Length: 334
Ligand SMILES: NC(=O)c1ccc[n+]([C@@H]2O[C@H](COP(=O)([O-])OP(=O)(O)OC[C@H]3O[C@@H](n4cnc5c(N)ncnc54)[C@H](OP(=O)(O)O)[C@@H]3O)[C@@H](O)[C@H]2O)c1
View 1 (cartoon, helix red, strand yellow):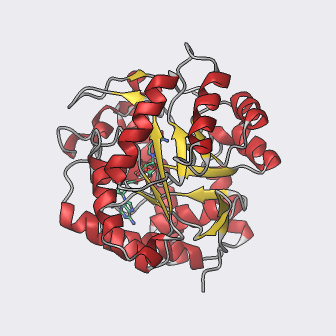
View 2 (tube, rainbow, N blue to C red):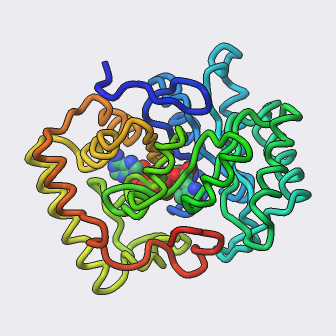
């Protein structure tokens, strides 16, 4: 029985951990499609209900993959899933650089395309992935609310928005979830977005909860990553910052070894013990990692260990920016 109880998402009690599907299509090196599909199925069998994707992951490939997985489930197995996807990041094939589009016409077209690729009649949770400052937030939320009205979307989300934007949007139409980067490795959300979400009764979906694999037993090393692995350009893995951050990670690994758990399980348990409205979505392409991550739900970290991790990874301790410059397009919380 999981120590971490079910959490509320889009009006439903769901397994506390979701599955981030992005790496099954791009950003973290090559993926084996058969293993990705087996991981999706294993997640479902192990009780995971929340699956996170976006139209930009593999430029549609990730939604199509999820669509194939969903089509393989019996109707009863699909009924209690929350499949979340996102719109707003526009990229050309093979490029990381992006522009952001929040125009209502774009939102309507993106929603239709996502419905098609996922093979569903309604998107469980539809996020604005990034904010386009050229389009007033009220117009964006209005266009998203129209999709709810039309029955194409069940619940709305916003990603990487400021606390003010979250508050403004929620006053116009209920926002089910805000998605931001959050882990020991990145604690910026604690300043405003995390408490604001709690105050408003909005779920806080923590993305990259494993610090893009830094907070695991297999941390990435910038020089040995595949040529198209985006972490090659991650400032936090470069030069002096990278060396300092990996030393910090080694301290976490020591604590995990002393506690008798993999690093990933410790990092996720810390996150689950933060606040009850936090829903982490660790990303993995592999069943073995999935099982290791889900084991975090059964852990209860002693208060002394939580306090030690808080201190070791105090906000500002990790060095370097959390994205390359191009990755900050449309991010309201740097
Ligand atoms: N809203 C946004 O802007 C945004 C941005 C980024 C991500 N996301 C979402 O958040 C999800 C999770 O974030 P993320 O994938 O960026 O980062 P993450 O969950 O912090 O880390 C994923 C990385 O960790 C590795 N990993 C996972 N479990 C492991 C384990 N137990 N042991 C060793 N390595 C392990 C994965 O490799 P393997 O595949 O080999 O396990 C992958 O390289 C994404 O899939 C995506 O859905 C959203």
